Image 1 (cartoon, one colour):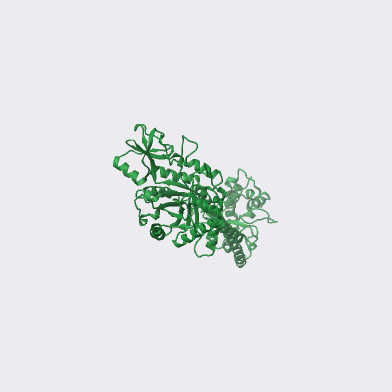
Image 2 (cartoon, rainbow, N blue to C red):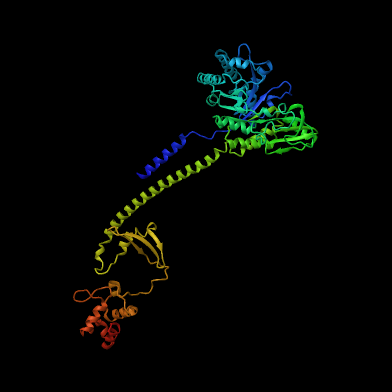
Length: 574
């Protein structure tokens, strides 16, 4: 009964653990890809999709009249092959269609302010995503926030309804947002974002771009900013969390580009050094930065206070994110408990160096689990294992105890049966506690190994059960024993009354002598009332002058009587 209860408790425990939702959410590794006319063309088949869990293709434009999505002929071709192409290298990668980016800033607010236009926009976005095989939608819009909360709510409702009425999986809905929720006159609808979006891509801090600070070098993509309490990635992420956005809704920005300034004095080339203005090109792709470093053999410095890399070539000063900065930021995202990161944009990377650095940094975190959840997993799993082992141990123990009890009962039944067959225990000598070998054999279950308690110098000791239920120990003399080969005697006054005297040390010799001259056994009681030991009986006869009655008549004919009397006197306490 007890074992059945334990099994039931174990079953309930396992079911409860199984029913608990998993709190460890896989990291998202997002890569943005879009085509820029002023940049070299990057073929979609060259994308290493194995480095990402999600790939976003941009950008679909917004028609200023119908407020539906529109594509150029070249974009139409790229969008139509994007999902199928990137899934060749990584079938599990999820693709999203990004909207906005280069859209006219006046079109989007007009659409968001009108319910009819919002519906046209939403319906066309879902239709285009399904048409080209995208599994989600992304909004890249960082300007006017008016009616954004309504748009997100209606968009998510439409996506949910569409999923119910189609065979496809529900579309993901994300958005790109500024580095902080409150910038200038823009206020993001944080509650709507938390409720209706799967996550947001938090962009870099534009307040530190060269066009904002032309006279001083800066760290535009800095994780920290010791010289400012206004603008840095950490300040922005913290601000989002402080206004109520879950860290699990935030994806960190990893740039594949840098910015350039022109130094006043090449010898003063740290962050905050005087500059005469913005260098030519301003924003520089990572692959161009690496080419310049290799060409001019420039020395790259990593500033751990800002978490940014920089180098100089003559009067040109370039700040960017190299491998150290990327790995540091990914580690920061894990410590903050963020959902993941996004690389912007992947076509700027140099042979996937930065994308690989980010992905490899995650490999040290058990396949992309955030490190705040990992300790919980390592704590919970041993507890579950310990509870299971404990319960299984109890089940085994109670089963063993029950089995042992049954064996004892069976053994007692066998003992009783064998004892009956062996004869009456009390049929042996009436004055001596003796047992027949058959009885002892039955009581010990034929000296079975299960009843063996141990082994001493005389031989093994076995547990035996008497008919009345009393348990005793039985020592079986071993043939290999070196003890017990000489007979000995214990004084009866010591055995019966606990009395010990100076004569006790010679008792063995004296009793043996009395047995020789009398021919009587020491184990039997004598006298008129059969209550005297052999020694006491000899003393009584000697005291009454009847010493010769104690002697063995068969021996008197061979030896003089006085010798027998002398032997008797030697033993008696006179």
